[in-house]
Image 1 (tube, rainbow, N blue to C red):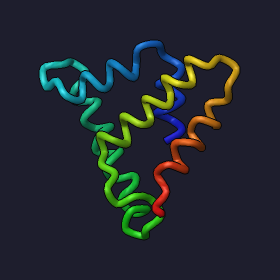
Image 2: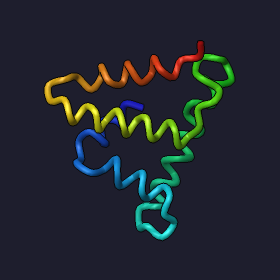
Image 3: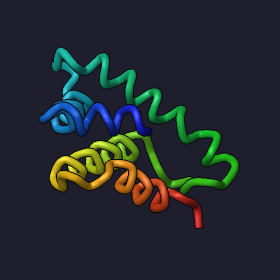
Length: 95
């Protein structure tokens, strides 16, 4: 999760471009973003099965949350991106 979050925070407009491309099969970025969606689906699967993270989390929600967190980090210069990632991860934990 750190890698896509860091990339999203580093490049202005990347989160919005990825989110649009995920839902637009005609986009030149769609194939790459679809691969990202597959990774996002596979990444939490084991943690969901073991009960460590919420079972109701889907790939699109995970990607949206990661990109939203990256956007938030860009809006607060000087705030550590790791802090936003910690807040996100704590919100994903199963209760």
